[in-house]
Image (cartoon, rainbow, N blue to C red; front, side):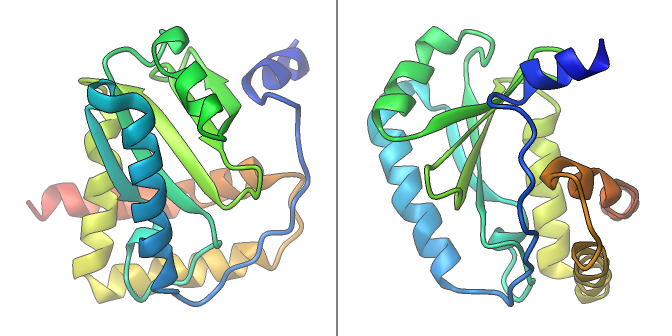
Length: 182
């Protein structure tokens, strides 16, 4: 049962990919800006918010060379309102999580950009920038997160999701600190 659910969430099934952590690259911001424009042009006013999130959005932080974009639409569960336009712009649906904030994730064929789509009002919309902003302004937390990512990337993982799950405890600890620090 769980296996079939996993395949419904991951369009195309589980993929084993190399997890490579690279030193910060200023080109990541340029890549975000290029793709933000493509997404904005494709969706027009249906794109409520487009923001650079994830490790590539934190100057000085080593990361997988995959740019994460937060895209807010009115209703991420209504794929017909945005998916055809994004697919026409060259992105492919990879993740469909109706049971987790109606999250959708699209990516480029080169696997170097991921667009995380949430509905307006979803709690994840503030969680992602909060984490990014805290890392931008707190060197100790940024160093802890980078060390964790490098240590975990050196291990063998069945797929990128398992690696991401392994980082959860550290991420939640950093988010807790960010919430208390405000």
